[in-house]
Image 1 (cartoon, one colour):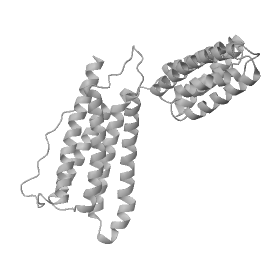
Image 2: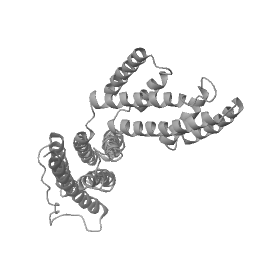
Image 3: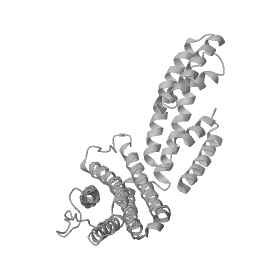
Length: 330
């Protein structure tokens, strides 16, 4: 957020310098476009700039046609009523359509005189310059490498899941009269941290998947890399749910605690390797010892086995994701 604030400051200064230097008419449109288009992340900036520019160009053409065709103030008022309603109606639906209807609204309201269809070009010009400044700022000022950040965020989420597992072990060891306080002071905060870490990773992955296709940088959303990342995030959530259930139905028995500690150790190691970008080797799914005291139908045993399988899936997904990144880098 601090980097984004600094970008906004620099973009504002550049816009003002352009206004003063070029003596542009309606230059406020330039600054508004830059500030609106510039988002904290590169994918959002590219998507919004393409929507803004595309909608404005199309809306500018419509505005020029309307300005050349309407001969009276009453006609302008009627058209403004329609375009204003459509602008508000599309605001929360699609930003490109919003920009499309917004352009004739502002152009017709700002006409120096009737039938001045050339004025639509001013709006298009200001939008193009403003969007260009915003995109260049995102590319040149502390550019966000979200694809590189994804592995680190996934590793941190795995560490948060591991901390949730550790909290469950502490919760199990609490005396019956201390359970309520332990749930509030130990288990709930760890569950919340795990959820927030998964949300951070999920949002970064969503932004990458929503990157616009711009020819020279066309994201391959069908590749195994995205499947591996999606699988990893999905199983982060599933492990957290398994821990939530196991905390209630399980107990700190001699057979369960070592297996839970083994799951925690695998999550810790997986997190360390992902954050450090070291080679990940998928482990085999752990098999519980023969002397296990749980029965196959026991809910706790089912959840524990599920956690062990889920960690194995995460390890394989992380190894696949790492391999795809290295292939792209080479």
